[in-house]
Image (cartoon, rainbow, N blue to C red; front, side, top):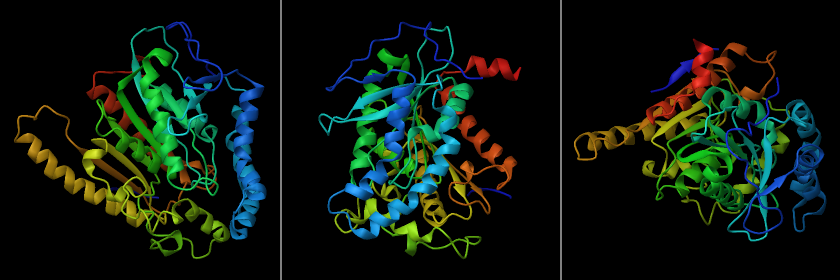
Length: 393
């Protein structure tokens, strides 16, 4: 059922097509941020937003205020390692995307475009960062997104969303869906990307939001072709402290005091919307999800039970639907393919840990499988990354 595994800066090419002028100011147009200091400051403000909320968010219980403040230095350390090297990078452009369900508001997105002289439309890939719904910025996944561009030739949009506890469910889900809808509508005109060849990815809660994007597109044409899910929480009906511990899960956790924060986004919706598949993708109809899905699963993650249960159910549903497809007039449609790779003894978020903590070979194996999965989807839909092919030959 699962595969178990033991333990130069580039500038976006502007010659491919005339770079469109993206609208400035509020409204229904995307806002382009100039390169350099201003985007760095915008990202910094997004990083410290949890501190601001801890101090000034009205009505926030003290049990969350002090935990947000205690988490701040931990976040600062993580951000310094992962984001600071990219502060003045020209590998991507920064835009602000209008949110259809929140008039006057916008969300930041990073757009990574491949170097190419070709004028043909490229695949579109949307990525969503993690952070437990209480933190994180798109810049934390820059290395992943940049390599996605290099490996696949796709245009990659890395989006953001509003954070809890100030903004509980469904705000992050709505923001992700609205940002994706805007990107899809304008992908060809603004970035030379093909909205009909869309793939998705997410890390941690970002994968939950990526599945929400897919569900929002289920009745549209075209839906997402595939999704790459990394450390995916799929059942938020159960608070973190009640989830079953897998073998190898640490007996003591020095950061256990922040665990209540990871429930603050879903807590208020648990009694009212416990059957909502947006919040709990484990309840989602497989027909609302991409037909090709790869789950990268940490074997010592608290999420192990729910995500493997989810994947097992999707595999069974896929067998039924593929059988119906083979015996119907719709036999030319794409089949369902669900894959799960379990990396034994790895903790949640292990792909972001430094190499002296984890086996670098496992990280390489997981990432190589991830990029290869997206490339296979592109190839099945007629796209081949010529630059990657030339490097390999």
